[in-house]
Picture 1 (cartoon, rainbow, N blue to C red):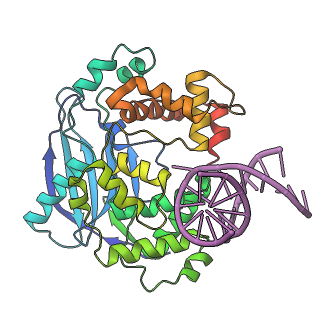
Picture 2 (cartoon, helix red, strand yellow; picture 1 turned 135 degrees about the horizontal axis):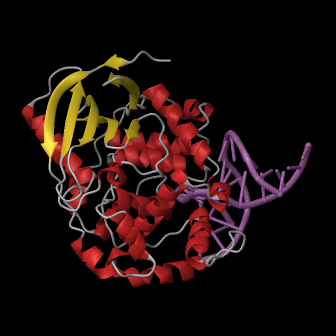
Length: 326
DNA sequence: CATCAGGGCCCTG
DNA sequence: CAGGGCCCTGAT
């Protein structure tokens, strides 16, 4: 076990999101299985963040209400961070958690929808979002490939514990991601020994590509969805499944829904067609079903998906347990 | 015990 | 463009 690096409070800022805003469902996604890099309790989220090369601890606290939201963000670091760095960190967090997202159009269109209406009512103010940079998300995406949840978590945890840094702040100990390029001296063979399997090659290539500075995430965000998709698919180890996750979680496209993985297929079949998971509805039919949500397809999926996972936190759902195998 | 598919993707033919 | 192979694991 590595020794934790002690951080201390270096900045505190207040963030005001657009309304309505729901803190807990925005900052905690029960389907993002945690691997020691974040922690949550109602009203508070802790996470690490590698920002401009600095290992940071972040604490978000809910200090407002749905209609009058207010978040206090405390930044912990080894030593003082400049105002510029703090400012850019804030705007990045506003981006990653979609704090300025306007959901009115979405709600107005589907508030009365038979399927989506109840989920909107329950999760009013929830934002989609993901804490990771593109590089970090790619590493996560790679360990998700062709593996069950338990195995993915194992792989991610192994990587963090070998190449990440353990940070201590606000009485929490959490793992922080390594810098892109940090794996340059780690051999593919070594990664295989750490049980990454054939993914070792993808991890190496991704790290090398980003380590050389060949990918500009900021610039790519400004490009069209088609360009983004094209650039992402050029990366070794990125295919249709991973690109679909990326376009939603990292690039914030709410209307793009073209991929359903086998376990998701089973879950949607049960949810929307009440079909047994042994005989799921075809992917084509599922995609057609979601057409009704038009330009909000993926956002609709997110609301329904999160609704199910929150339900799981306080209710045993046998058929779901069977599919996820944590 | 063996076999198989899994929160895919690459490569070959 | 279809299909085999890939690391490892848990299910059957």
